[in-house]
Each structure stands twice: as structure tokens, then as C-alpha cells.
Length: 466
Image 1 (cartoon, rainbow, N blue to C red):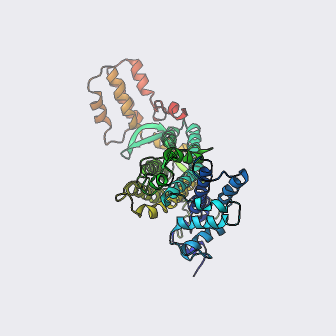
Image 2 (cartoon, rainbow, N blue to C red; image 1 turned 45 degrees about the horizontal axis):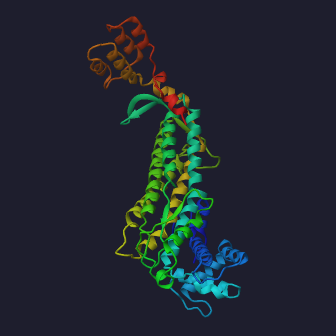
């Protein structure tokens, strides 16, 4: 069989692998096993620190040993877990269950250590979903804090710079695709920057909820074995152990079935979908600005825009971003619609969907990097912006009719409509129209001085706001 990226089924593990490699530390099977190991080892430590469980106190060295198993969990360790699951290992039969395989892997690790006597406390009273719930939350948070949010903040900072740099660059606006009251390029970039910033503030405001309450969320086995332990409070404090130095909180949901209902997952994925929709809007606008010649791309040495047309410099970065954002959003939408629904106390359909989280975030990351690359090689063609404004003096009709309303002129809108609608009009036409008005000379001079490039309202001030 062929090997390497070109044999990969998906573009994420093939063509785009180098762009998303950092996400494999959070969303691969290896990463999931590593987080499961962290949860199981920390749970054993928590049991040992709780009076009345029957687990002896562990020395600081033993706690360090347990934590190091997770910290040093290797790809070879992940292969061992997989082998236990599929084939068995030594005296351990094949489990056909990945979390049970992790438990057996850890027992094997402790067999030749001072912790041999407490190894049966691993996974005590837990169901696999207790471990998975916390592990997936760790994966999501790690990917967000260490990769995704950093890339999004890079985009926001680029938009902020463009808004400030081009705050006073006048530009013809278009509504319904038609010439409209002028704006500035910087103001339009500020709109995108503010939209993105608002959505970024929303991520992490609410915690990612996890479950840790046993087979059907009632702590049944816990209470049967150790009825005097306050298991809800224990579980809450246990989950909080994973929040050190993290802005995004993971918290216990006390009200679950066998699975956490995934409503906070849906909230997160909906937020990601809104972010991606904003960036899709940006990609399409930039594509159009490039098409109109208002934004110019810097050609890359050796790059080909067309296999037959040598002059082409295509807006491929913005097109690539748009396509990948669409794929990511289709997945995020499915996650939000599917995951909060589970038959009765659980079915397994959520498990296979959770394994696709990385694909959605990876397509998003490809898009973010494409956007950053595209923004990094464009410049604003101010001459083209000015030329487009000069070609559409009719946009001053709004200003003139509004001033005439203030001056008490009758039916000014209708007069300007008759003068401008569907017609090619010049500044001279406006001047002749203004001269015929029954208003003061001061007002006439004010109207005659109007020019499209200066008719931008508060756009400059808006663009400069942060």
C-alpha cells in the first residue's frame, strides 16, 4: 500500500497536514488516550487524598510518578493501548474497548512499582464516559487555547491594523451591488474586526461541562461501596483540578445520564460557526475587492495562477479560506444538532461524532492560515478607490436631498430621484440643479462643494475606534 501524505483519504491528513500538525496534540487518538491517562491517574491521586475511601495516602514521589505517566505518554504507549484493545497484551485478553484498554495499560505500568497495591483503585466506580467526558473537554480546551484562539487573534490584529492604516481611505460602498454612500476601506475592516472580537469574547465565558457520576449519572456504585463519601462534592473538586492556569473552565454537570448532555459543546460549536461565518463574509468581500482592482495582490515568485493564462494572480487564499470554512461549519452544525440528542440514558452515536471534532477544527485552522496569508500579501489601491468614487457622483444625491429637507424644500427626494435614478450624472449636472434651487447662496455653495471622496460621514472616526 502507498504510504505518506499523498495516500491519505482526507485533505487534512494529506495536502494540509503541515498546516494543522499542531492540532494532532489535541485531537488524535494518541491525544485522547493521553488525556484519558491523565484523568485516570489524577483520579487515583484524588481518592488517596480523600479520607474514608480506603486508598492509602500516596507519597509525593508516587503522585509525581502517576502524573508523569500522563506527561510522558508516548506514541509507543498509545500503540500498546491499541494492541490491548484489539489483540490483548501478555495475559490481558483483547478488550475491544478503548477505555478499558487504558485501565489495563495503567495497571501494567503500576505492577512493578510501589503503587502495585493500589492499582485496583484505578477506574474505581467509573464508567468510560466519565473518563471520556473529561478527556474530550481537555482536548477541546487545549486546542482552543493553544492553537485556534491564537490564530483567530492574529486575524483580529491584522484587521485592526488594516482598519487603522486605511481609516481615511475613501471607498465607494455598494448596497444590493449598486453604488451607495461612500465609506472608507478602514471602516469596513473595523466592522469585521469588531464582529470577530465580540465572538471571541464569548468563548470561555461559560464553562465546558463534564460528567463524572458513574454509569447513569447517579453515583450508584460509588454510594454502594462508600456511602459516607460526599461524591458530588468530590467529583466537583476533582474536575476543578484540571483548571489551573486555564482561561476556559471545565466544570462538573451534576445532572446527567450516562453521558453529559453536550449542551455546552453545542454552545461552543455554534460560537465557532458564527466566527467562521464572519470570516467567510470577509473572504468573499476581499475576493470582490480584488476582482474590482481596489485591493492588489503581490505576486509570489514562481507561483502560477492558471495553467493556460500566464497573467493570472488568483485570490486563492481567500477562496481556500471560504471553502474550508464551509466544510468546518457543516461539521460544527452537525455537532450542535446531533450531540445534545441521545436515546434514553445513552446511545453510542455521540462517540463516533466526538472523534470528528479535530476535522472541523482542522478545516477551520486551514482557513485561518489561508486568510492570514491572503491578507499578508494584499495592498489597497487608493488610486482605484478614487477612480471608482469619481465615476459615481450620483451617490451625492443622498446628501443633497437630506440637506434640502432641512432647508424646507418641498419633495427634495423626488426631485433628486428624477435627476439621478437610472441615469449617468456628472458633478456639472448637480451644479446646474443646485443653481436652480430656491435656497440661500450659502447652502448652494455648501452643496456644490460636496465630493464623493469627502462624503464619508463618521467612517474615519469609526475605523479608528478600538
